[in-house]
Image (cartoon, rainbow, N blue to C red):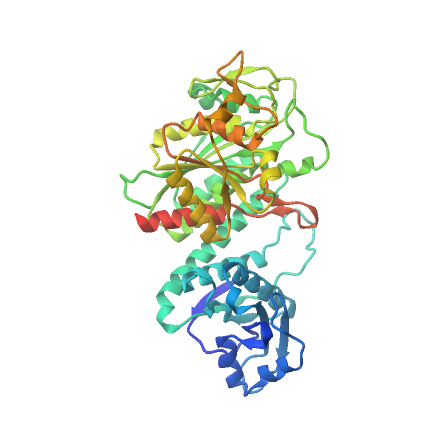
Length: 496
């Protein structure tokens, strides 16, 4: 899809569809008033017919509106004007895009971007609209012999703004498009089946990304990981015929002496639970267990496309977790790269085992901050559902920074406790500690485990088990938390 930002009056430019908003009680928004004036009251007359009240989510399509250059005018319900906030704006744009696609229009003008929405500015509204437009056209059909749905007809979208906002709008558009591309990349990786998206495939995709955006990359294989003493990561890989990989990508957009932000993404490309085998039901969804890795690659693509002035390193431990004659057994004790020993009481608690070695590896970069991202615990899904991601941190200021980025991106997280008392649940009679702490506070004790490997830097852990994908009829990757991570880096780059 082609995007552009323009300072245009609605109704005067030739377009297949002009989109304006209507508040409850049939109150026209400012762009709708301007269009109604051009149309000599045609919108007001149409609303008086009673077919539309302006409720959120409602639409009304008008054809051949007199005195306008538009083939169609789409009226979108905005709800109550006083409660038209950022969430309502995103919902209205999403509704508008669905309606546009249904018309078969090849191009459209979106004037919803000119509306005040909560505390948002024009840059936020433009960027969100561009990202939502890319999301609205996303299809995953690489594995089908023929398409289920026709490709979206919409090829060109104009996002309206005031003349004084031209520079800000253009920059925001570039960022919104880059974020959309990053999310689509993460979704594609997540949606691929485990027999295609293997650790080697992830490494190949990272190498292609590095070539395209001139990133620095290295991929560590099993012998190199053995040499580094990555015993916990390799313990997970023991049962699989697929070789594990440690993927390290470096984006250098800032000064050479600027400490990087490290993103560490869990890359379990398929998780059977290992010897602690999972139930068969819905096990197919364990192809999404590499969503942390996908979000790191998607974020790096977005950051590179934006050319942000910041340094970022992405670290992805990638492996399958399979049962087999050489697979790790409950009760086995392994040594991590940090030198700490772990009693593995449950091989299905494998994400923390690969992440802890990756966190230790991150120390060599002396990072300004580390964020690990993982579909880590079912307990987090029970605690928070599928709305927000769980956040744990060893630094309150960093936690607030990440939370604020999530709010701005409408990709929210919730701060959960990491009190020392929870560490007691990880005690082991035979090793330094165990990899699980029992059923109570499972998401917390998983984070407590990781915190033992994050003492040399400021660290946030995001548990995305409830937000990385959807089940049921809408089964598929959500691309989260690429918006949160990208916004965090955009904010960091701005302050630098």
